[in-house]
Length: 68
Image (cartoon, rainbow, N blue to C red; front, side):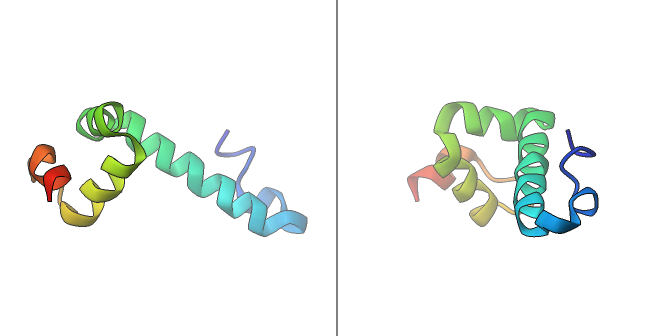
């Protein structure tokens, strides 16, 4: 899918392709990292945003991040 939606493959719809490609990259990041996937499974998108904002190096306890 990444190749299919790569912005270089759709120069006529570059903005749309870039948004889709970024969403695919985010999905891959979430699904490929067990810890990040667990955060998403338990807390959803809001939990991921908090996790990434407050724990950029992924070494914080997610329960502490969500409670802040």
